[in-house]
Image 1 (cartoon, rainbow, N blue to C red):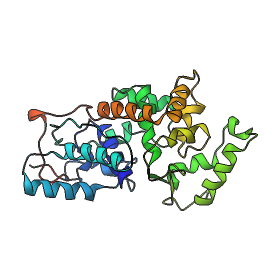
Image 2 (image 1 turned 135 degrees about the vertical axis):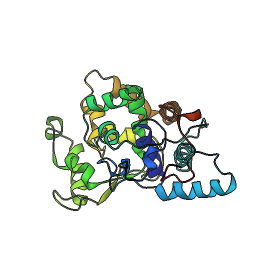
Image 3 (image 1 turned 180 degrees about the vertical axis):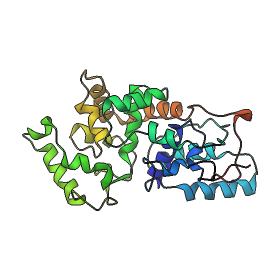
Image 4 (image 1 turned 120 degrees about the horizontal axis):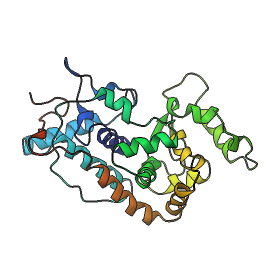
Length: 275
């Protein structure tokens, strides 16, 4: 569940900002972001946020927004899995609407090219440094076969002539989990080394050709000037550096287009607006 809560925060912030729009259900006037392609049948953790909200509303009504709850939950999820902690700035208000189209447009796909990833992050005011750092979130969690099938069955020239079979061995493991057709909901850990621990192994995996998603693998294979590769190496060799950088980048992400004052509300139920 830790990875799911972190992912919820990411998918929320990349669509209109960190405003809990991802938590809204559909109604007669709006299609929920939950139904967008990047989210459908894959996002989890809504019930956890609902339970936290219920307890908070009972203790202190109309005070803690769903957007703040989601941000704090992501922080706690990372810390409870062995990752760094950080101070969360509070005071976010909740959006009065969702953006189905925005979710389809701005949330990167698991097979995105490096160019597309950089553009997606730039759209949110995040740079390449943030892209690489926040990709380290994939040290925990799982991905569906639907998300990594292309990685398992399509090869590039570098992988075809891999004399040490770094890629071929890993690909055989993936193919044993995910057939070429069917079984779309089967899952594999994003990090086979320590799947439940937040650490720097994600970057080691990339360097060894064992990144599960195509969008992770391209950080190396499509890095033509070597800048990203150097950053990956630095994180792979220094977990303390990665943790410090991660805190800076996720705090930056958590402040994207925050609603304050009368621009939003404090929902009493995270699934619905108050009016």
